[in-house]
Picture 1 (spheres, rainbow, N blue to C red):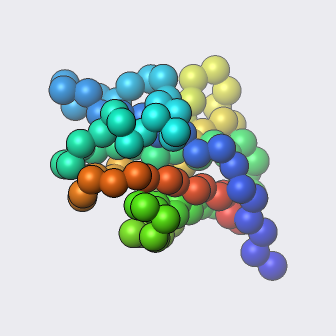
Picture 2 (tube, rainbow, N blue to C red; picture 1 turned 60 degrees about the horizontal axis):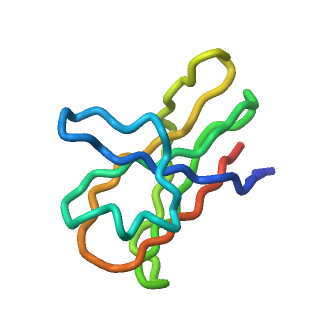
Picture 3 (cartoon, helix red, strand yellow; picture 1 turned 90 degrees about the vertical axis):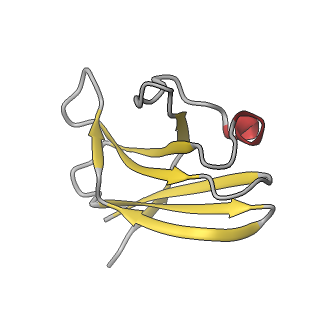
Length: 105
């Protein structure tokens, strides 16, 4: 069967040069640090070979805006078996955002 595990979701802000911050922004501070049109990178960490995808649930003001499954990985330095599933999201409108993440087999 399918197994899911909730994990800490990280958010990285896109910089003017097109790269992303290397230090995550706390989700509680997200709404005060983003503007309409900003691109943010959502990331959830996986370190077991049997996880095959990540899923993000993006909410604004308590209402689900988008549910996104991804298999796109970003390998993390120091351990070839450690990675983050990532999804780049463009902020469509103002409001208070929350993000949930899970990794799946």
